[in-house]
Length: 162
Image 1 (cartoon, rainbow, N blue to C red):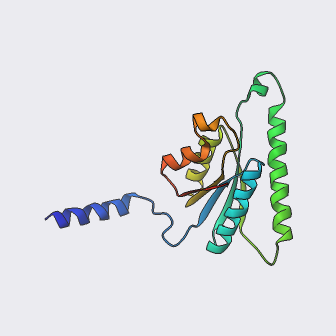
Image 2: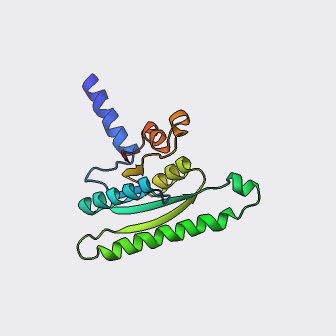
C-alpha cells in the first residue's frame, strides 16, 4: 500500500511540475554587468551553451533607482549605455569566434536590483541553469552576494565563476 502511495506522489509531481534539464540545459542564463567576473562568467556560460547546444540568455539588470538617480543624475542614460556596450562586446566576441565557436545567444535587459532581476529573468526565460560572476564588492560578505542568494533560492543549478 505504501508503495502505491509513493508511486502516486511521483506521478502527481510529474503532472504539476515543469521538468528542466532532463536532456541537458536548453536555456542558460548568465548575468552580466560589465565587471571582470561577469565577463568571465559569460565566457564560461558560452562554453557550456556551445557544448550543450543550449541557448545563452545574456541578462543585464538595469538598476531601478540608485543614489545618483535620487540626486537627479542621468542614470537611465548611463545604464542604457552600459547595455549597448555589453551587446557590442558580445557581438564582437561572437564575430571573432565565428566558424570555430558558435553559440546561439540573446540579450535581455531587466530592471531592478541584480538578484530580483536575475530571478525574474530565469523564471521568464525558463532557465535550466544560471551562471554569475563572483562578487567583487567587500560589503557582500555581510549582506550576501547575488550568487549566494541565487544558490539559496534553490530554483536552478547556479554556477559561480571567480
